Length: 211
Image (tube, rainbow, N blue to C red; front, side, top):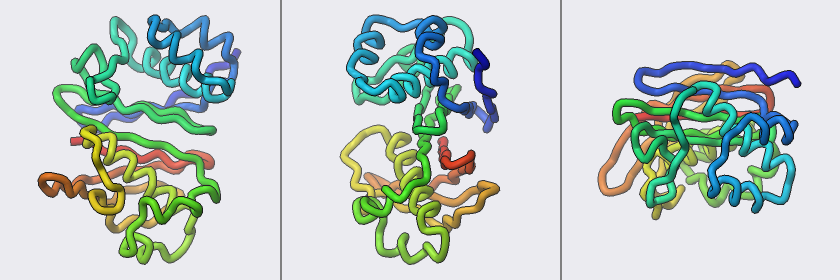
């Protein structure tokens, strides 16, 4: 089968990679090495497309980071590489699979989402009044961008107990098909500001952040 084209970009001590999901589950199972816990996890996924998305994240991981590397999990549930040797954030949706790998102590957060009207039904759960007031056009795209940004910040923070409206703030965001940057803030214990990046890939948005 034809494997998808892989996009790769490096940002200092972090490596971003993405591709389309591979839909051939037999190919994935033959080309991805899973440990017992991962085999158990894949059995809990009843939908074929979800299994393929998840398996593609592992295929992508080993494609861009060949060698004796393995996705493990911290006690807080955050994925990492070789029990903390490197950091990693993983995300997948209908049209996109992505990973963001941090080296030399670089922490990372990443999220991707397809742009759909579903976001309108949940905007009250994550968007503040101030953030909603920033949206002047392209509501679906900007709400999806806001959601992805807060998910990426949540993954970067990695300690849980985060209220998406109270503790996470996204500033100066305005969707552009060309992608771009904006700022995000985590208001928890102390105030930390971050430069966030995003890409628009087909019908999906990809947002990432590092520190």
